[in-house]
Image (cartoon, rainbow, N blue to C red):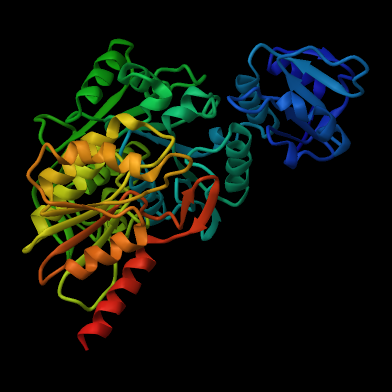
Length: 497
């Protein structure tokens, strides 16, 4: 596939310097990807200015550059000057790849919690309805059976469009993707034609970036209200969430189609009752839908997953999928790694690894653990460094309220002092009567929790989930909570026997 430079300039409303007849094969924001036939978009980021790499990309054979600046004196090649390089990147990627999202049933999922699992469920429901599917998640990117390591929750626009073109050419009919608030705000989702957009919930997170909850909500709303260049055909929204109710009100005033799901709120289009959760058998409930009431059995553990299942099913019905096939798809979907994932072990207590890294997510995880535990709940967690500090004390308070013992430790401290982070979490725990320990070394903290566990206890290791690394300073080290937990279990078994 290719486009003429002149056509591209008109599409992105750019001032063209150079030969309009030159051919462009692809577009990238990453100078390391630049090669013959590519055009490079020079984005001025928070720490790096892409214009610094113009000479490098031209040496690599690039056709030229898209930039907010005028071309440098003596520049040899094509130069397209635009008002906003990020918006131009999204528009150029969509144009060069011939709008692949319009050939797919594209579902976008946004919200603070539940995005990843809901994306996995959408993938499973597409496959259960006989359609090859693709997905973009925090954990992995997938086209049918092919998996790729995820670089970020929502890739840059050029990477997403390239991925969707590959998915379309591979025969996919459905694609589901997480749409993070930062990605929406940075225009990475611009020009994507979503059939359905899902809003899971909104709780405190990323305020280091967005500053206020209003700004955070406004970024999420971009997926629904047309500011990304397209309006979804249907919006699936959680009405148990106060921000969800506000979103529905604002969208309905504009005449947009809203489909609702809820557990607590009466009158939702998709709802659940008679919810039963078990560590051994997963989650069962009755799902009320416009097509009738159905018995649902899922291997996913916990009430939060009921919301995810309702959201995915509502979106699937909007796409025209068969409800009975969807029920079977739910039964076979084990969700994302690191989301209330039980560590296999033949001891008389349970060890759960979960990605919960906000106070609301930790609340949901610990409520589930409390409902399931016949013994104590022991919680191990920390907070990431160089990230939103406002959630540290609230996470401590939540952990203290719903645990019998808390061990505060390091997450990814990055360039912050781990002990300082721990002290900020400690302020929240002090508001409760829960006993706690401070062990900054995460491995030692996990070992300590498992050594203290007794029959029928539930050990929750929260914050990192599927991640297989820890960032200390500027270095990344291999670290997998699940592996460390298994090693700790083997150690206590050796001591016991």
